[in-house]
Image (cartoon, rainbow, N blue to C red; front, side, top):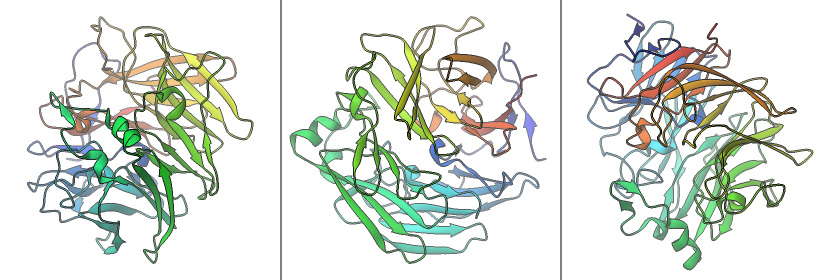
Length: 396
């Protein structure tokens, strides 16, 4: 049996289809900026703990056949998001990224930077330096380069959990102690580190190559106090360019996050909230013109993620309130949004409830869109264990 419908709560527009079928394991998508779909949406890469430890699997979406591609037996590596992992041991759940056309997957095991293909051929490209902590990685669109951001390990020392949740005051330590992050770029054929760009007083956790220029790397400063203007940056191979500045209603007291390239590489989208509990917003930066467009959203602020499709289509797991939803700061819906950036208009299409608990990074739905714009895939622990579901992008 390749897929099965499950009874999500009443009131949803459509019923999602369950994709992964192991009810005894926690299984989840990779981080959404990497996608999880390979070979023209034929294969799905995902993380599963069915063997006792998290490992990488792929599922053929046409035949239902699954294959294990990593052999992690050492637990979870300490890294961004997974602060309670083991230093320099285990798999970095945050590190897994894919080159969709070739079916190549990259990840970090201990300090090893690993490349694996769909047939299971594994190559250790090299190691990142000692005394560093890693985060989300990203592979260039031509599959020639892998960016591995690292930060001085001191940044993640000490008690960094408060009531089971991350303490995002890490940036205060980074600033006070002048700690640094590094944009490390590795040649995926030789494993040679071809770029090591030091960024002083920075905690970098998200990196993304431009889809059309592998010299351009979009990156962040994670949760600084002046997040509204210090979150998003572009490294063009020489210069570090701040992407959001004060003015026209924008302030350093705003919050901004989850920056992502549009598929054609001409613009960057992001979202956040204006200062003093103002409205939430979605934003777009058209790079060549340095044009910033932000659209305020109605309703109370809810945290979520936005992922990019074609021609102004976004999918989100947050913000939408309807059908008697109770107020809260986590979204419960997977929605398609058709955005008319020129006129500041958004048209929302609730697709289904995610019904995920959001109780950890792993239970965030983190929706992705397939290349053909047919489905949104997402993670949910609605049935107790985490699993991957899909829902049609076309509610009509």
